[in-house]
Image (cartoon, rainbow, N blue to C red; front, side, top):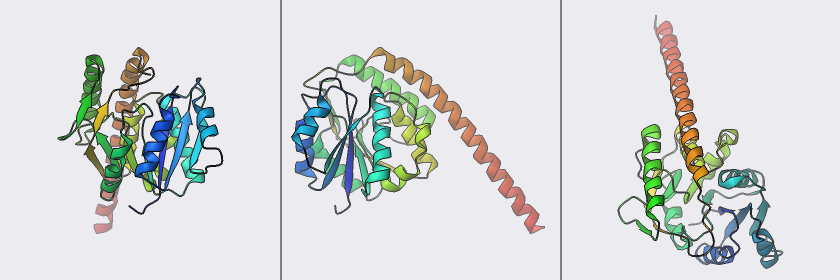
Length: 256
């Protein structure tokens, strides 16, 4: 893998985990730009800054209270302006996304514009996740699959690798969800851009240290945003159908 790689890691009070994640990433992808998009109140950002002072390969963005989606979007904005990376990865900081599996996602990116580290394909495993999280994940995946129909198994895992060409074409204003539902919004934009999507099996491990950021509000927000996404998709499909109809009509005129 000779392409330049950047990875965006949204953090919310991950002081206990973040240095281990950074070290693990640098051990498996030697020339990687690591962007910490931080919304913490526990000093995660200062810890990273002090540890990697003067290291241009580690960047810390202070994101305020943007949530995971807003932090990742800020990372995309930074990459567009300041990075020459050809592949853009996104991973969580709680250890659920194993850095050692990143090279497999990068290799698969040779044949797809978006590669998802999947929890639900053959060879995948989920370790230590509470039953209610698994139920919510399955329900969210079912909802997303009915709306997006992308032909994949895992719509809601945030372990991803994008081609730079897709990130550059994203309408970032439309990535407006505060939680994990932004993952479905990203996938929808990939579909609109004609990008191919592939999955790689991963082992998803529930966090070992720190407090989970999952809460009831994410469930409520997910339902609302999925409904809005469905409406947006219907409008887009009608608009594309109208464009096709207009083009066909123009072709008929030219053939007369």
